[in-house]
Structure formats: C-alpha cells, structure tokens
Image (cartoon, rainbow, N blue to C red; front, side, top):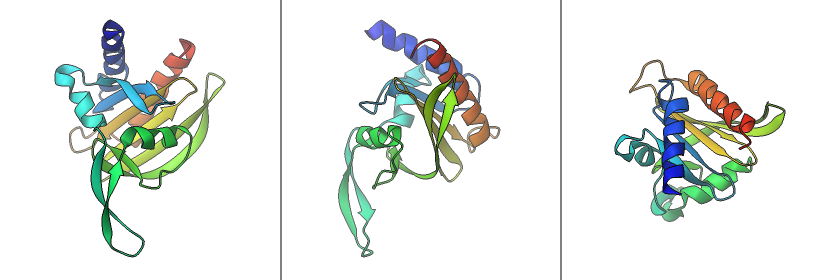
Length: 167
C-alpha cells in the first residue's frame, strides 16, 4: 500500500506540478473526500498545501455575528464531488475559496464534475469522475504563468489519463 501511495504521489507530481501550471496537486477518493496522493512530493509539501485535519473556524452568521464552526475538509470535498455548494464554503488547508463555477464536462465519453474556486491570486480546479477526485492548485504570487486556464488544462489532461487507465 505504501509503495502504491508513493507511486501516485509521483504521478501527481509529474502530471500536475512538474508541468509548472500547478503549485500543488492531489488525487483522492470522491466517496470519502480524502486525498491519498499529493504533490509536491519533496518534504510532503503538497499535503500542507491541500489538506488540514478537522478544525474550528470563526464563521460569519446571517445576523452578522460570528461563531466557531467545525470545518471538515473531507466532508466538504464530498459535497464538491457531488456537484453541490457546501454551506460553509470550500476550505482547503485552512483557507477559504470562493466557488466561481460548477459544471458538468465529458472526458473520454465519461461525465465529470468540474469545480473552479478562487481567492486572491490563488485558485483550485477540481475534477471528479466516478472513481477519482483530482485537485490542481495554482498560485499567481509564486509563479506568474500559473492561472485558472493553465491549471485547468493540466487537470483535464491528468483526468483524461486516469479515465483511459480505468480510474
């Protein structure tokens, strides 16, 4: 199992990060919302950019007040994979992203759900197939050529590779 995880980490690194269009990438299970591979692999940097264990966060309420709420990023990702907009918003590694687009697409004849979300100078592209959850993150502050369009291209290409391979 550990060897397989290392292989997937390297595959994510090759397809998403090494292309220079994503600062981080992840691969996971849409049923659990959990990632099982992340890149950059070195120093497990990808994990730090893409995931945080459940935590409490002060969130604004409808009446203008704030109250602490539990943020479970895996549970939020399950909703994203189902094509829903989570009530608490999209949280990745403790940062909130604004969902700007959710749509259906097709890769190799198979339906995929696409979610695009951003925050200042950063964003994520999430593709969901029946078997895989693919996350690409870009950061314009770190690499000027990283943007939503280029990130989406490499995430779409990796998704196509996974679908062709039966994932």
